[in-house]
Length: 150
Image (cartoon, rainbow, N blue to C red; front, side, top):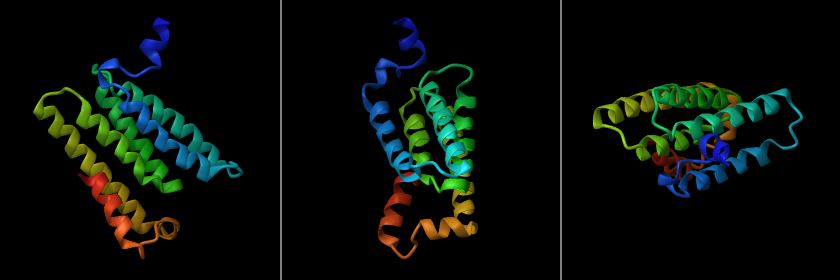
């Protein structure tokens, strides 16, 4: 039982919120199904690694910057291949939830905005993603971007 608490479950001090965020991963899993293309399988593996990084980023250790950086990198890869910009919400929630000093928080936030800017740049220059995100529906797209940015 200690293995489950130490390596699988989220720390108790964060309550049920981290588990609720994981429900959002059902959407891309369903959208990619039936996983016919190799990119879908790669995305599935990267999502599993992302969840591992997401879970470990709730534990403040010396490896915390690596867990967060890993989330940024995986998100950028998945933006390029699958258009999964929403994964930035997971990292934003983690950064906002951690009991860390203001200076460290600002550092993580700056890196978050840099990674987000790179992700948006990928979306704007990638023709496939321009088709996925219907920029004609500016209202829902704007609301979505506001949640990610703020």
